[in-house]
Length: 115
Image (cartoon, one colour):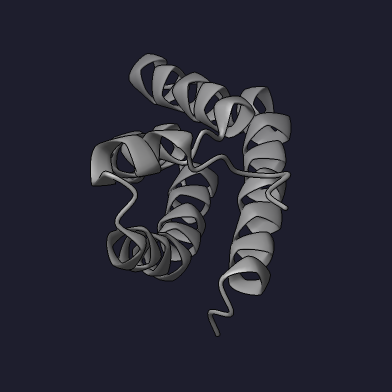
């Protein structure tokens, strides 16, 4: 049972095509954690435009998987990058985003037997 993601939008755009859903989830599990790591590294190195690129890249996936809190946190990070904020201002946000994505990835892997 999905606690950390919601497939309603995915099913809506796929006409409940199970193969499509699984492929989309495989892409999410493969790409988003590495994009997140790159984004966090860019934040720590004060590379605002690079952090923005990774944040912006993740945004549609978080929305599509109904990860509302993670999506909102990601928007905060995007806004922070535009304002070229200080690391300490966004630290809690990216840690929380990381937590939400890790939980969703773990749950998706278990629910869909993806390894």
